Image (tube, rainbow, N blue to C red):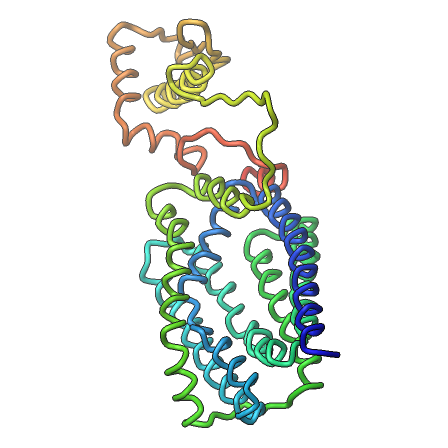
Length: 369
């Protein structure tokens, strides 16, 4: 087969493979967002963005290796052996750096555990990203495409199994890691037909590769930071739900269809009737909790939203009734911002906010008692 035909075949294979992986990733995105819910999906997005920011395993090395292999001037086994050694060291550095930064950063214990689990993807992707260089040089990108498709399908299948068994975020990240491992094993299988490097390093070759890759590595770091820092920064200033909604939109924007003609869109604000209803409903719950704090043992019936506000029916201990002074005490208890947050969290263990949860995450978040 001529070089022109090989290049054309390579391009078509990559195009088709990209279409398949995009479809599978869209299904994966839908599964993750519906199963985990906004808050945990936000944690998932933060973990992935965090790891991408600290991924030092490539830095342009694969591109330079492919260039060297394409010239025919270098021993392929020596080049790939050196690249494997360099990237193995960088994967360990990236993994340790991710865990260390997570420990000193303002992350919860659950987020730190999630980052530690997901950082296993660094060594797991070692073979697939290294052998991609020989596939590029030999115009055999179908092998890399098969690995990528296998990775996506593996992660999707395992994530579906996690959702069915109600496994939670950590197991979802294990499924994420497993996809990288499968990709590496597939690439290893095919690469052995072309080259069989050993994990050894040629110092002169290593210096040449690192020197040539430096400018490209800087450019890649800038690109990754520009593309991923927003999610990490958003996590520092807001809650998991907001990150989840933002992350879903960020991931789906390239695949999302435009709004059809005539679509109606409304924004919920405090000035709108729907917005006022939400505020009044939430305030009614704060009112009930304030009364329970001031009169332990009080009983309440209903607290509906009405046209001009809201009300609650209470039965105070000992047949007591509210006085005008009591109403002032309740209002003061509600107005104290810190007390309001503490009142709500006493029973729920969560910040006071409205949220919708898929059935799977709702069962985990609010178990029957």
